[in-house]
Image (tube, rainbow, N blue to C red; front, side, top):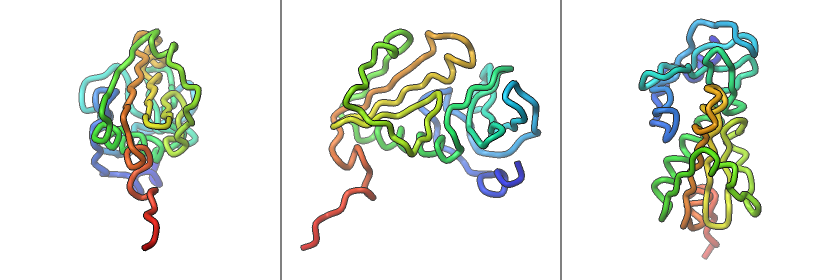
Length: 172
C-alpha cells in the first residue's frame, strides 16, 4: 500500500463513463481481508455505491462488495481505460450503448483486444474503425447480469483508433 501511495496517491482522475464516475482521486486506504486476500481502498467514490474501488493482493484494480471482482490487472490498466474512454468519446462519430443480454450477443470477430487496459472483468476491443468497451465488473460484484454494459465507439479514423503517438508521418 505504501508503494501504491508513493506512486499514485493524490492523483485526481477524470470521471469514468461507468461505475458512477469511479474514484475521484487515488489514495491508499486501510488494508482489509476479502475473499481474494488482502486488499486496500484505491480511492473514494464520487457517488454512493454498494461497492468500493480497491487494489487487490496482486496489484489488480477492482471492486469489492463482500465479493472481490478485479476489473484490470493493474492500476495502470484502469488509467489506460479511463484515457481511452475519454479519447474514444471525443473522436467517435457515433456512440452506442448495449446493456444486459445485448452484451452477450455482441459479435467481436475481427476485433483485437486492447492489451494496454490489462482487462479482466472489463475489456476493450479495437476494430477497423471502432472501439468497444465491455464492462462486466458491476454485474459480477452485484450478481446482477442486467448491469453488463458495452459501449461501441464507431466512425474512428487511424488517429481515433491509435492516438497521436502511434501515427508516424512519412519524412519529406
